[in-house]
Image (tube, rainbow, N blue to C red; front, side, top):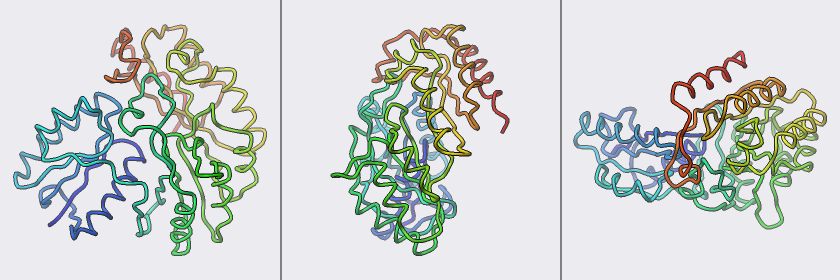
Length: 328
């Protein structure tokens, strides 16, 4: 039996797919390079945005046309309300693969190591707490052993993953302590991590990064908006001033640091003036990279109750303005 995995979404989903592949191969499935030759097609879904869900519907129909013999299975971030329709289209729905499933093969670029899953923050635009549940951290000893094994066999890039890595907690080991311990593994390798929440980016974490030669000087720190009222409606838990002070502290403590961010434009009720506040912040912070997204309502998230009152063309314009701020 041959399998093929289609992955949508972020690096967390990519990591889930890697670990699912290990599980399938233990059950004697063999990987294949294309959908047409697969007996089993697994679609790893990201349903944080409705547009992503719509793409999955289209993908299933296309697979049915191209390979009628294939059994189609869905897994990943799924809201309960999507189950009924997906169950009618697919042959089954699997739960997300467990955090403890280890990937033994070396990654071509960097090894994706999930250290936690789920989220307790409930940002109003996000469905993750409803798809992945509350925060659950992987045992520190298990993470350490997996990374040690990979580094010993020649892995040179390690990416620690979680919806909010700053919230990691396993016994007495929090995220700064975990980073510190991983940094002590012998070998020439680099550690990166994502995603961080600004409200949980502690002074201790900044110091650990500054003192370790193995931790990357590239930090991804989503701000999402440059307006306090919009941040409050997003339920982000910090103000623009607090974010700016954090960036100032990071840059003062960690020389040559590069900071990237996420921004959402066209959030419900966002005025042109509020958008310009975001533009101003983006210019002032001098991000080396910006990932911008036009807001789209997701049923189940709190913001879906708000009127989506910024038009699609205006969202596209605002997104372009943001992306034009950074020269790639």
